[in-house]
Image (cartoon, rainbow, N blue to C red; front, side, top):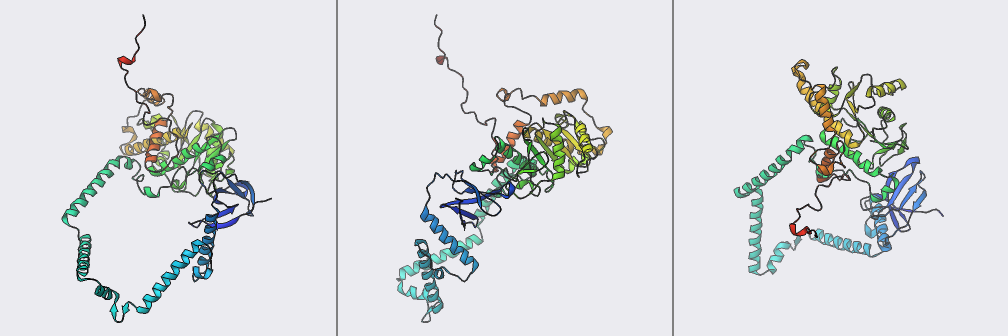
Length: 498
């Protein structure tokens, strides 16, 4: 027997389906035009799937919570009342003749209010030519009347104080302003790195990890963590100011068995992208999981990513960065010069000269693969920015950060002329690169957990979490030691037995 449902609206006006006294809210759109609806109760994994004809084709209803039938009936009645009032503004609760305690209260309140308004309009504020205030003052004793006049004068003084603050109040306010300015200066070092955007409009922050507990059942093992990491990279690029509208693409390999990838939906700005909105596609760019949006992906851009993913199975994440500084350096014939450490730690940089951005032919794919090579992880696309790759998402962002800084440094030095620049020789380049591939010598506990760019990425995740972005990141290195080490006392060391 197929399940049937009733339709209603929530308090916020969102559609709900009621099945067997249980409420389900819309979750996301699946493949084959299926709709997924999940239970509105917290920590409940029940769901419904509807086809394009809005018929339930799959369900999982095994609720472990108590159903309040009386409350549901009241909500249904209230919902029907709202719909009728919205359709005809002249309809009032008294004309709908509802039943139940909830509507009896509404009818009583409306009746009292209407009688009060009628009496007020009939008297027009006067009683036999005397105002209500004068009538009340006649019935009050003289001392109480004097106290009320004194209270009115005090209220007027308070109002004047609010309009014209005293010098002492202005001094106190200036102290508060100075304190806020000090806090802003303290955060200025971090805010400047993020173009002063990271602490802007924090009350309206879209959470990065918007995946609820019941949604994890539809993901592969480790997919939720990968989605949170990739969505956090989009948010970091937005906070750094390294975005160009809805353009640009970042892809991450989900697994090598099925060759599935997570890609940003084309049409969303980087600060709008969340973990659940990422689109899952195969190597040909066909959508496997639409995510929580109706947007598709940029196919021609993904062809470039899939070319590298197919040729380099060691690469997990690819970030196409198109900031003005990186695009300017990619347009130079000299390419990226070895000027600072940032240009060395990313390794050798490849260059591809003929990428236009349209559909990629097989010959073009071979050239891209050959130019990137088997080891390099950064490639400049002439006049089109750079591709920064990595074996992990952390390493890919590490290469992006250093590439952008290296390009900024080079552009600042270009006015003096290339002949006047002192470049790093090959011997020192090898020393700097090898040192960047080793964990810090002073942090012995982090050696087993350390990987390229991991420490820097975790620091940025802490910054986002502290700012309220809710990254959902699983930290490998705890910030605070759970059991602080201490020196042993001599009395705790047992003596040897002769």
